[in-house]
Image (cartoon, rainbow, N blue to C red; front, side, top):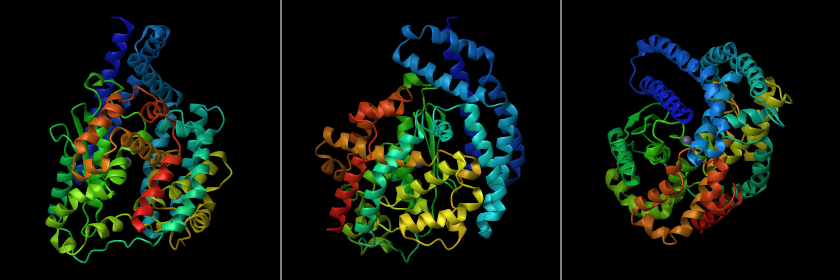
Length: 493
Ligand code: ZN
């Protein structure tokens, strides 16, 4: 069999295996009975061990070298397949097996310690494990290799090609204007509050309704409940999402729009890329641009709610019968500097990410000690957001990422936010009547454009390349800042 055909077969098998692992994970978070936990952990260890062996096999290495020698003759898509497979092969082979095993053992201990530390608001319980995880992450950077800064290696794991200098430039452009926007808009929009709880079944029905309106294909995916909402892929025609429902929160709406945005990306990938490494969103940042696009740019806009607010009122009369559309839209956009990243509004959100980036960079380059984190966290929240951290549970212990051993992940959230505004700019050029499009509930028009411009390509283009193709420019903070200025000025007017 010729090299390329062999490589494609290899890709299909690995993708199948990863989808089976994803099915086990989905089941674990959605349906698995409590006592199955230990057995499932064993199944994971066995199957991921087998998958890993396939992923580092010399046979695959040889195929990649052979295919690389014929690169000039390959199509754009086949070159991309080679790029993605080679990248994953390098990541898998550069980390020694004992290192990977130690890392994952430590990460699972760290997650337990993190849970306990958070419950007791005692950073000391988590500190020794975090110290070890930082040490291993620095070692991981050495194994993976980098050109300028060890943190580059960790950023690249989540966003191909991203460097520390690029993230510094991004926040350099953002920081001062964001602090100015917070000053300008904080406290000027009244938040919503609810006396009556929302019936859980009604929440789920409404979430389904919104997903249907967005064009989520329920024949190629489903909606389930889980404590932390997520999106996963079990096959080309099987893209699943979960959502959560709390009695007095609008998370059911924004969680559905957010995960729906991730899922539309996956459902929109061209079928000819099925069962290959290209049948996936290209990076976390671009993925997040899609979820934030639907959650914020569309889902917190006035025209969107012109169409859907009457239905929300009908579904929940006790909560909304006496609320006007304008007050509702102001309420879901209230700017309030706070302690918790996941509750942050669009204006303050990226300052939460900036704080985490500065801390991670310091930890990985060795200029910051883990023991100093609670103090540094408090200082930075005071300085950037003007809020006082009373308890480490609402401070340095709030996110699970570091307990997973994930460093370099947070900046992709900001990339997603910036890219979503930039993509919105490109959409508005295509559809100058976008306000009427949303107000008419014609979300199909929006989804089809996204599918054509972004989703369909899967992982064929590098993240920056894709963004430049779609918007005519590389990632920049300016469209996002302009979007905030325009949107919030009109909301407070
Ligand atoms: Zn997301």
